Image 1 (cartoon, rainbow, N blue to C red):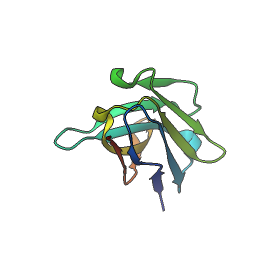
Image 2: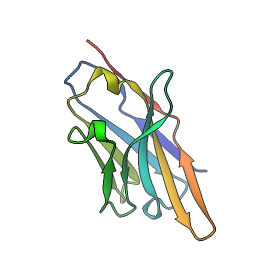
Image 3: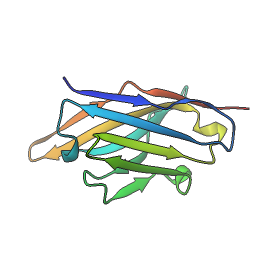
Image 4: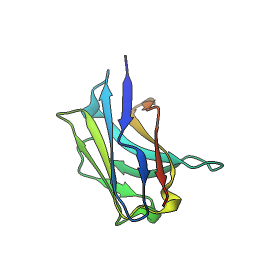
Length: 120
């Protein structure tokens, strides 16, 4: 059974930090690129950060560059999102996403999401 389980969300003051984790099971984690998405109320889901299956390549949405860091530990089947200098506009539900593209198709999975609220 495939599972992506996020944790680490919560309420934090502006300027604070949080570290999200996403634990994967039920598939070969090291074969999958991973992404973090977020969805704020009334807005579309957007990709925040992405990391290749080996961890050698990362990409970030412009508004989080320099503040967020995505990383992964393939030995622990876990991907992380370190979020620093948080702003109120970072408030959203954060989802992890696993993607493998192969000839003729792809395989992808979503986590259930974790709420991040940035407020004083």
